[in-house]
Image (cartoon, rainbow, N blue to C red):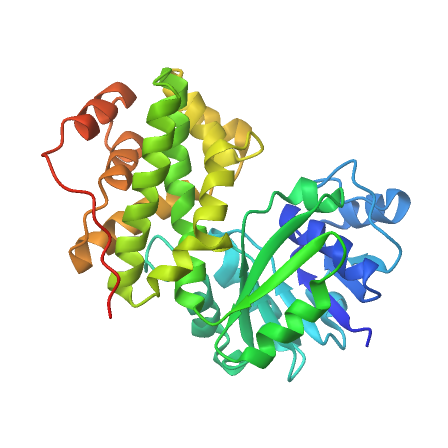
Length: 337
């Protein structure tokens, strides 16, 4: 049955997700913050600021206010960057339709609180508890908008909520799996951004493909360690939102996290690279992840070195040297009974 879907606000990823939704017959409403962007959309059927050159199908409309976008919505997608998610929740609170299902598509941790995005949403919109899901996986927005094949994961505490989103998105070019480990799915999506910066730094230094493979593999190990310590299932990290998203973000040149690392490894200042790249979720997440790991007593050496390069003045070469010079240890993976 066709549904009314609101994407608030419609950044790059949210705009891309409008494509499979509209092609499944749903009526999609985008909240574009700037009225001039709405005007451009209505002339060109593109989101000029976040996904230029990708015309959206019939069934997608754009509006300059959250109230208009949310009108009678059955499904609501929260699409802001992590730093703006609280403000988005506050902006839509008075207009959120009762009973609407809510989906978080943001991959990150809130730096000040170390909260996951679903926790931020429930902090601001406690009434959506039981109706909230998260989406994560190895997905570049541009490829989804171009209708290239992809797979992703929707996780929710209520299987019926996850299934509703699966049904809304699933189509010939987007395969959607459901999951019940919200914590693990969110952590995989957030923490891999930090590892991707580290892999980019290594590649920028010219450290080679062996180093890249080692960083990806050991990065997955430390993501899993923190996830299990916080209560996630270790098996979640073997799936699309874990190793799948990690591999894509560490190796795909559309990844802003990887591109930031490449720039730093080649000698560019992080601040200068960020001015060009825009939002890079791994930067604030690095700060939150290091604090979270220290609080629960989990070693995350790659994340620590990325944090040191970003915030403590450590050179990329020094960071790599410190990783290679760590004490001898064994490779092991503990799966709790």
